[in-house]
Length: 354
Ligand code: PLP
Ligand code: COI
Figure 1 (cartoon, rainbow, N blue to C red):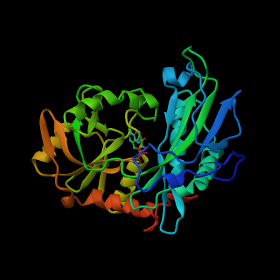
Figure 2: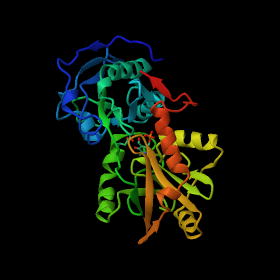
Figure 3: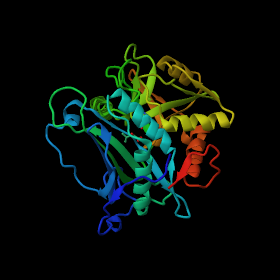
Figure 4: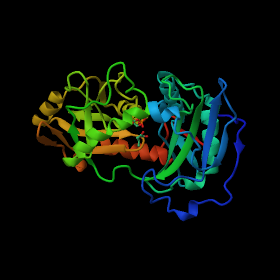
């Protein structure tokens, strides 16, 4: 449900929006006027409130800081030519947040708090939504354990918060990626399939090593054999081999991306053959050698579609065809942008007006 809920609103005295060019700000560094907060205590959710964006008062013993009982989501709002603001598939983020909450022994956030709070917040800060072709308002809902306690156990208190920031491109250029053969992102039975904060902290060191070698991102491989590709950085991975769109099948080591699902829906709708299955590096190298590897790209909310120009594996950089020779990924990128900007039919009813 997306109806109204009881929210107390403390509006900022003077908006800060004019201090920025919202169509031209670095990703994730400039935050909109307001934030939504809902607290969980005494076994229930308290009335949510919207306040001017501000720092959090907290104890140095706050459990999220020590043991990572913290989860988040990433989603976007778009502004069309008439100034109408819409969200892209927000209910999917709501459902995924609660999937993460369950796995991390946290209380589920009620739909009326997530959706009702989100709608109210985005309406209030609609001036912060970029109107540029590739701009959007990045929305970061998150849930953190707030007990002041050092014992390792689920917290009794939590804060659910939504902050937002205008965003342009996450990657300014197509990316070169390195197949990671030593470190891993996720293991069977672990938390790779949810958006737990620790998944991202652990990715930084291997990514830094890859960057020092001239790559922008790593391709994560399976933890048991390092032979099968899983994801790239914070994106799901797709390949076009021959005329088939192929992506690793979902498992407990892969995040079920909303962009991934959208790309696959469009591919199927356009008559492409789509395969969700295991993909070995050997198969990718073979396809490169026999000329059938046409495209590789990552997809995600922040990154949208990130074209991959080269894949580094065992000391060799396998170069991919030039962007102008790719048929599927530029088309899917443009089509998704047009749906989000209200320029083409929203056949799957993905957009929700605020
Ligand atoms: N995989 C990981 C590890 C991510 O962090 C993300 C980003 O959210 C994705 C995939 C893509 O998911 P989505 O398309 O829902 O943003
Ligand atoms: C997203 O695409 O929303 C992500 O979560 C990536 C992010 C960690 C910047």
